Amino acid sequence: MCQVDEDYHEPLQRAEVPSVSKKCVKCKEGTAAVVIRAGDAFCRGCFKEYFIHKFRAVLGKHRVLYPGEKVLLAVSGGPSSCSMLSQVQEGLSQNAHKKLRFLPGIVFIDEGGAVGQSVEDRRRMAAELQAVFKATGFPFLVVPLEQVLDLPSSVVVAAPSPSERAAGAYKVAVGHFIQSDGVGVTLKREETAPADVQESSTHLLQQLIGSAKTLTAREDLLNTLRQHLLVHTARTEGYSKVMLGDNCTRLAVKLLTSISLGRGAQLAQDTGFSDSRYGDIILVRPMRDYSAKEIAYYNRMFGVPSVFIPSLDTKTADKSSIQRLTESFVTRLQADFPSTVSTIYRTSEKLQTCKSSSTADHCDRCLLCMCALDTAVENASAFQATLISEQLSQTKAPGATSAAVLRQNPAPLEPESTAATGQCCSSGGGEDCGKAVGGVGCCSSAKGPESTDLRSLVCYGCQLTIRDMSSVERLPHYILSEAQRRQRRSQMREEIGEFLLDEGDEGD
Image 1: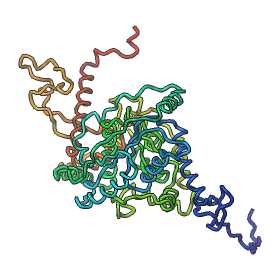
Image 2: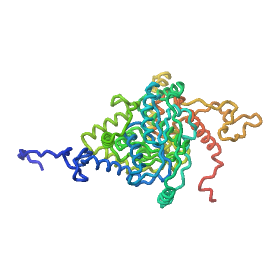
Image 3: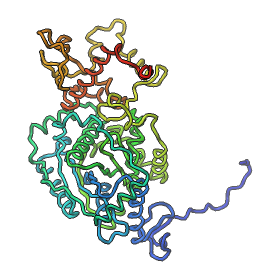
Image 4: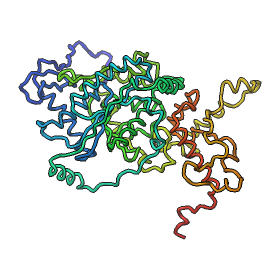
């Protein structure tokens, strides 16, 4: 216990800081060339072995990628995704100790139209990335983000997931792959240059992104559209896995950002190694054990090329968005406390959801992020308390005019109906509702214009994004059509609800 007359004249001891003059902690012989953490100094050769082994270990631990399986590498041009591409190329080389056995392909989503880049800049960046892709020898695709406007409605419908494989299925698949000498069929396709994109599509995309009032909502909307396009590309080209380049630092920022944006129920899918929310397409994150510092050192020391491509938050202030503020907070805290990122990251590994998105029913999924809806909760919950507070804040104050209240609290944004008068409400399903015979008219035409309240079809986090949009009519057609289809099914279920049997009545 501290005393008043205690003497503190003893000299303070300075903590020993590792330097490059130290010996390697692994081989104990070579001179350290890089210091990853305090006490972890590696020479050049040991650092390369450590980096490669970590990539192989995370793939071997989870055993998600089966031999002969087509895997799509989502490369954005940044250091993390380019390092992932380098590791896959290293693992498929002839000199690899434990050779990777899947068939890779590369996809680059060109987001230049969303951030306002000129056609010349998009061509130049695409040419630089194509040079990197051609050096690997893998088939690659350059897909402009404008294609997200023409996607089918099946993108926001979870496809049936493949059946669960037996415990020894992985070893059996390895044996078959070795017997066949690793002969596989790779995909070859011509690249789609960004210059081929029509200006009208780029203008519509910019209007869609610009409809979000805040940078936080724009980044969240752009991330959703990017994932939809990645999943659609993987499905159309025959890939069953999509490899993302999210590193440990990025996932730590994403975890805190998701909590701030009300996406706490989806943390296990957003930060885990594998994400099966789309059913037949599984997203994997093999770079999640690497910090941004390790990746930067490896790329610098071994000449891994990368291309800088500006994004929505490039050259923005720290307080311009929640994502940018969280990133600044984590990186600055990491500089003073080196265990910050690893602590947040290890916490994300322990997170689980009570209701998995892969087993949730189709109508119980969010229309945008495809996660299980977290809005169906009890009355005594934080979500219901938030709704009540919002309703009370929108009540008309005494003495306030109707125009002032309407100006402060606009009505919920609802897209116009796409069903014309006289068109059957079940035209999308291929069957007639039965009321259009004899001139009675379809049930949907009798109800008048159809309106879709997107807030009841999305999770709480996506509700905040939609709330920041000036008009949801600018959303892609595949989202609006699927929303109207879900609403029609919900209305039909309410109408025939008294004739349906409950699960408990089926055995009677």
